[in-house]
Length: 300
Image (cartoon, rainbow, N blue to C red):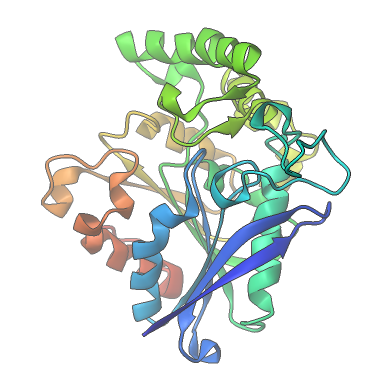
């Protein structure tokens, strides 16, 4: 049985974001606490089935909606931004930056520790969530990491038309939409609405060959100091995170290994960027759980 607890997780700057803890009925029975660090513009509810599966395997899982997204759409530090009469700031006025989402991940861990204080902390990072792990205040507590589709996303890592598409998105489409709407609308194909400054930061990172390392103070040192074992899963048909981008990301971590997985390894015709967290990828879920607990490297 899985017990689900909704939490208001307070970040270091005072913003309160929406988090959920999935745990056994007796939380103390959990062998590990898993931070499920989600992708850019993806709500935490997307990962609920995967989280419950991990609980059935004896782990506890905490998820979070980053500020400006999903149930944390209006979350911001006290006194920041001009609020509407309802007390909620319109998305175009949201002050969040991409690095603020790191604070939200730390807030989720801190909130979960009230329920599960002692279990080892491990992480499943999806895309953006894996990219920023070394920047977390809790980074030195993390004992093992599995990332899925986590990459450094410079357009040169794509080929042909896909490279042209990525260049257009990062250099024209996102800056243009943010300038016009004041935020990145979900209808653009990105997923959920995203605060404008977060989207602008992310696009700027993507336009640099070393991604956030070229823009975030102390990031390169944080990556060098992050010694937890990292298994970086590269999905061969992932249009958002080509294997070359996953390998580039892993190259900056001192204790990482890249595992490639193809859809046919799971008996599927497609997998892509989001398929690993859908129920038909349960074979992969078992392998991820084993990697988190036992350090297994084999995938599928």
